[in-house]
Image 1 (cartoon, one colour):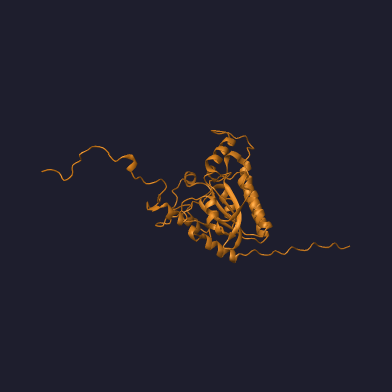
Image 2: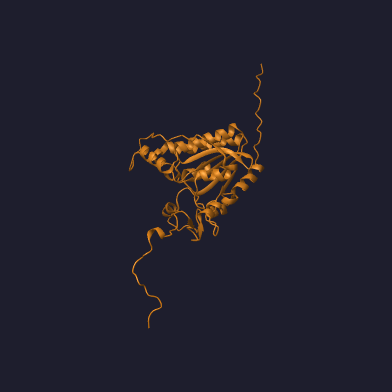
Amino acid sequence: MSSWFKRKEKGIVTPTEQKKETPDGLWYKCPECKTVATMAEHKRLLATCGNCGHHDRIDAADYFDFLFDNHQYQELDADMHSADPLGFVDTKAYPQRVAATEKSTGLKDAVRSAHGQLNGLGLVVAAMDFKFIGGSMGSVVGEKIARAIDYARQNRLPFLMISRSGGARMMEAGFSLMQMAKTSAKLALLSEAGLPYISLLTDPTTGGVTASFAMLGDFNIAEPGALIGFAGPRVIKETIGKDLPKGFQSAEFVLEHGFLDFIVDRKELKQKLTELLTMLKPVEVAVPEAATSVR
C-alpha cells in the first residue's frame, strides 16, 4: 500500500524571489501573557497589552507625543551634556561611555523636559529615558529637572515628573547624590508658589530618584505593574535574610501600603491628568508687604 503523500524532491525548492517572509517589526508578543498582536495595534494601545494590560517601557518622546495636544510641545534645555567631574574610568572612560550612549540612543542624557498644552491646560513635563545608562540620575538630570521646575514657577504652570530610573549615576558619585537635594529644594519652592506637582512612577523607579523627587508629588501615581522601591528586592532579601511577600515593590503592593495615591492605565493617563489639573488649579499666593520701619 502506497502512502498518500510522497516527497519527490528533497529540500526547499521555492525560488528566493517567491518567498514571502514576515517583515521585521510587524508583530508584537506580550512578554507576560504571550498574546500576539500587530505592532500597529500595540502602538494604538500606547505600548500596552490589549489582553493582560502589561505596560511596555516607552521613551520620553512617546509620552510627549500622546500627552501634549496635537503632538506639539517646546523642549527645554535640549542640548545639555554631562561633564566628567571625577575623571571616572571603569571598562571605559566616562566621556567615551556618554558619547557612545548618545550615538546609540540619539539622546543627550537620561531626562527630557518640555512644555505645551494638555487638553488645553498648560503643563511642564520632565520624562526620563531608561535606555540612557539605565535612566541614572547625574548632574544633567538634576539640572534639567531643576530648570523645568523653574520654568513652571516663572510661568505659573503645573509640573509633571515621569520617573524611570535605576537611581544615582555611579560615574558622578557625590555630584549625583547632590541632585536629590537640589530637585527636592526646587519642588519646595514650587509648592510655596502654590503650583501643583504630579509625580508619575513608571517601571522601574528605584534608588535616589525614589528617595527624592519621585515621592514628593501632591499626587504620587504609577503605571500598573511598575517596580517601585529604593534598594532592589535581591539586596533587601540578602540583608534581612527573609523571603519577600509576593509582588513586593510592584505598584500594586506600594499602593496597598499607602505610598501611592492611585494607579493609572497609560491609555487613561491624559484624561486623569486633565481631571487632576482642573482640580488643582494653581493657587495665587499673596506676597506679604514689606514691613515699614518705625522711628
